[in-house]
Amino acid sequence: MPEDLMRYDQLAQNALRGVVREALRRVEKSGLPGEHHFYIAFNTKFPGVDIGERMAQRYPREMTIVLQHQYENLVVKEDRFEVELSFDNILEKLVIPFNAVKGFLDPSVQFGLQFEVVSVEAPVDSEGKLEKSASGKVTRELEGAETSASDEPPKDGPKVVSLDSFRKK
Image (cartoon, rainbow, N blue to C red):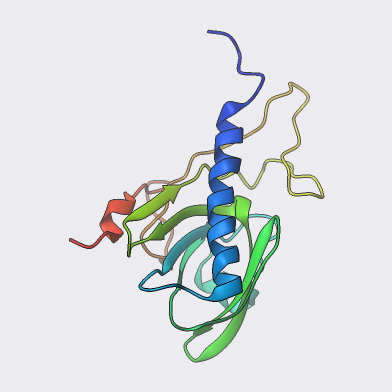
């Protein structure tokens, strides 16, 4: 089979991340319409993620946040978003690059996306884009979105959970 020099897998991932970016931009501008709300799972170790020391200790690998009623100061940029959320009645500012997002779900309309997340070991340039190794290939790993941000890492590697578990039945 010929080598995919166009990297259609990366093009598709970038396009789908654009859906998340645009949804958040609409919320930034006008707030959440109707019953819409978002579950966003992300890799807490990804370069550029800033969740504060307390949250980093509590969620050493990944975290799922909910944007629904109690969020403040949502700012959406081309490569990341920032939001303030309350954890144990303490307001925390989170900075999350879109490339760190593992899963996005809007359960009000049963819409969800899962993303391929770049391995933390993969070199990333100043614009958050993957740098190629000497062989011209990019190091990647596929991780699924977990339904909750657990304090303990899975004992047998990454856990893949279907976003269907978030859907109303």
